[in-house]
Image (cartoon, rainbow, N blue to C red; front, side, top):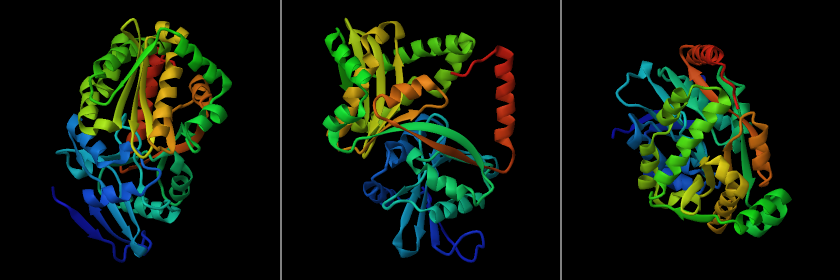
Length: 364
């Protein structure tokens, strides 16, 4: 793989604190920065880039930024393989591949983010997409004010695990959640967790059931919902995750009489990130299986020394936000950022809005 180093000299839209940019980011430097980043996520690791590239036509486009004083930041990123730069999209991360954004050994500064945005703005690619760690939202928002950049508001929930599981259980979990977990433990549920990939098929079967349920709730044609869901999240995607990530990819499955009723997928490294969930609602709901699965995943994250348990996007769903907040998770309003040479986002939004109107789609 060719590594390109760009030295920054006399470019008026960059401050003189940024010295050079290297792409792709050298893996040993990247890993060293990650090991010192207390906010780091599995989706910001070299292994995650390898998952993306193994699952589709992507290649590593990560960037190492070096500043005066020796500070280093990594922007994990991929681009479409074989597409000319002026037609290509670089993303941190691509749609349905989680959070990207900057990784740093020290807290990220607004000026540094502004330098990164300026560097990306100077490139000749068609689009650059950045979806940062939600906890970095204020820094990115402050830096984005300095640039002409498209901002897509988002909301996610994160649970602080400081104090360990006993503290989280007693002080963070709502009494309703503790009661639901106790009910689940008294039921006939049997829970299994695995990091080898053997539970991928159980998870995916539940995921397909969830697609049908979501289609009904959203008034979406069933075949369209299945096509969209399986195109976004084909089974081989999760198989590759298990193969490449190993211990960092854990699937939890709850069963009744050997029948899977609920499953969650958690990426666990420096911090934990619940990234997918699926269930048979008729069987999982009465047993409170989802509460039990998250309780066990949170307990495991605490045992592993994680500081945060990310619970993912909540959008505008009050019920989803309420479920997460009863575990003690806090909402973080942040944004996804897009740099475009053509108005792709605007055109895409108009097309999607028209299609939704035609089919009577209901956002949930």
